[in-house]
Amino acid sequence: MLRHLSLAFALLTPAPLLAQALTPAEQAQVDRLVTTTLADTGVPSASIAIVRGGATVLTRAYGKQAEAIPVARTETIYPIASISKQFVATVLQQLENEGKLSLDDIVAKHLPGVSGGERITIRELLSHTSGLQDYWPQDYSFAAMASATKPQGILDRWARKPLDFEPGAQWQYSNTGYVVAGRIAEKLGGQPILQLMRERLLAPLGIRAVDQDDAVGPGYAQGYQRFALGPVRLEPPAARGWLYAAGDLAMTAGDLAKWNVARLSRAPLLPAEDWAEQETPVKLTNGESSGYGLGVMISNREGRRVLEHSGGAVGFLLQNMVYPEQKAAVTVLTNGSFSDAATRIANGLARIVLPPANVEDAAALAAARMLFDQLRDGAPDAARLTENARFYFTPTALADYSASLSPLGEPLSFTQAGPARLRGGFVARRFRVTYPGRALTIATFAEPGAQGRWEQFMVSPAQ
Image (tube, rainbow, N blue to C red; front, side, top):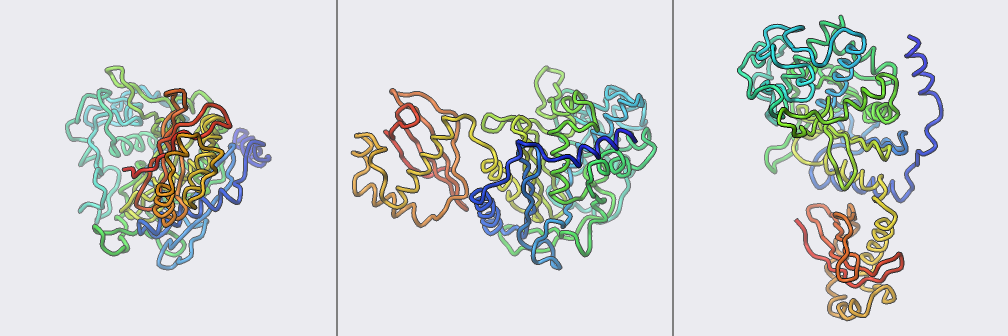
């Protein structure tokens, strides 16, 4: 109780001084990115949250969240599906700290009847290295999901199959492993897994969450599907019980952002070393990294470490990305199961929210965008071009640049692609410009220094 009270007090204190609200220009970029992506993909809605400087600085919703919610609201709840796995992992870490288990315990010690249970550890369940076959690899609701099930039904059908590989030897995503983990948490925690998460994690953080099976009807987002390029249609939800500990939480984007803030601030739900353990890739038996910790995937994007997890429920795709060193995070919840809208929006938000990797790159990015806009108008600043660049940009070249780029309108994103390199006495950089349905690459050379002139600025199509 004292721990919960101290946490509640901490949550009432002012946001970190580093928190930076989005500028009007950044908000305009966010709005353009999301609305254009929804229009391009046909996904009905998106609900987003942005954390910067360790605090939530924006929550916003777009589109049609349900037949009864034609105008999006930030308070609308979506399932978060497999993003729930990190909450389950946290509960098990807490139980370990209470002396009720060790993550290196074999499964058979706590839950008999699981294939390989005498060799699989709880840590291997949480890191998808157990070898247990995944019960839901499909990207659609399969036949059995039309009928309700219970955790034991999933275990009886899938957790008694032969292992796909020896525990720890490979990484293979397994929802089945998290059903096993959930049953162990319930047995040792003495409550249903949802109640364990609510009392231990969600309530202390002020997060309102419901079982995704109950997130139906008025006030909740509805899922939509699309067959090939056909019309967007409502997708009936699966029968009860199919996600359980593999992904049974539903909440708003703003509430999921509270969890991201807790992770960034090392909230006392866990000791700091346990948060770090979650975020450290588990090694396979051959010594290679699995790329996955305990409920989160660890990757590197444009030179930055990112902790991420996607989610997929029937009719929904979700994306959550946390940048620990930058104290930033982006959350995107969409109600369409048929496109890359969630990932596309999340990546675009990260580019808007995060600063370039260094000061030189930041200056070069701003200068490149300025020249790109000038070329769209057919009037580059000649003072910023070298003699060779002025030779290249003939009247014919300028006319072609303007005629071909202007109709594209404002880009969704304008980012540096890869690190800067030296070549021929110049600094070489590549930039990527994205539009709905297409992308451009810009190959550049510039003189060193903040005021260095452009020697080359060549735009071409990109994949």
